[in-house]
Image (tube, rainbow, N blue to C red; front, side, top):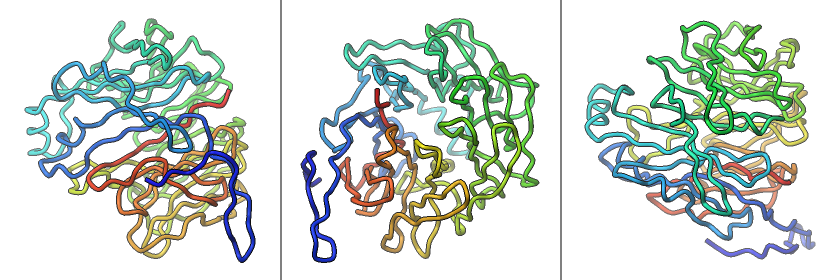
Length: 387
């Protein structure tokens, strides 16, 4: 990868020199793994490691290496604490025998052959706390986040008797509470509002808004059979989610009180997931969902334009801006607006391999922050909060 100065520089545009903004200095957490192992997704997944890199591409390193404590174990970066001092990391393990059964039957089997736990990792000391092993409710726990406005509380999603449930717990892993309304239906895409008083999720692929304890759940009815990935705006006024059919869904917004529902834009035939392996397996693609800008004015989203999947941003009023213009076959994925509103992070195959890039909030001055390397994938970037 080329090296870039982190100070203010300039570039030529139409015969003049235009200032280029200094690159962000806060960290970005992400996951890196092989993607060219032909024996199937398990043999790629076990190479996954939680990583951090600075927003200018410097100081790349693995974190939580001590969680690789036995064969067929890997780590995934999952998020940050609000103060940026702690990384949230998943520790995952699967048996090779279980994967062989899954690949033969083309479905996941989660009883006994899997274990995924949620961990909190101190960046300064490297100390790791496994919070889902405490008062364990499931062997399959993902989606850890720090509860907005209450750092003594965490949220996560657990699969219990084959059904996915949203949970809350204390910071030390005690007092786990199931927030599901009713026991039937697979509940996923779970997040809390910025004030911590509400939650959103999709259950059986329908979006619901509820109070923080799971009560007073309200179904957001679009008339579509497939809803996915509801996410609160930073100001708490809106929720963005995908709605439509599986493989043909589009960004919609609704107000926090359930009113004002509308479709923002069309994704141009994009299926809504990005393939993360060179040789696809039975469930190897990763969902590619919209996200908010820090000022809640824009939704970043990927869409098919011609023969590429491009990065766009859409105003809450529905104005669409195409931010990338790529060669045929290129794909962009997993956008994340920076906490200060100045940047957007995303994955892309624009240089021939799956790597992470940072651009200005308007898509200008795109630069890689990980090295595009054939046979490797860099995925799921998360900005360290600016404090």
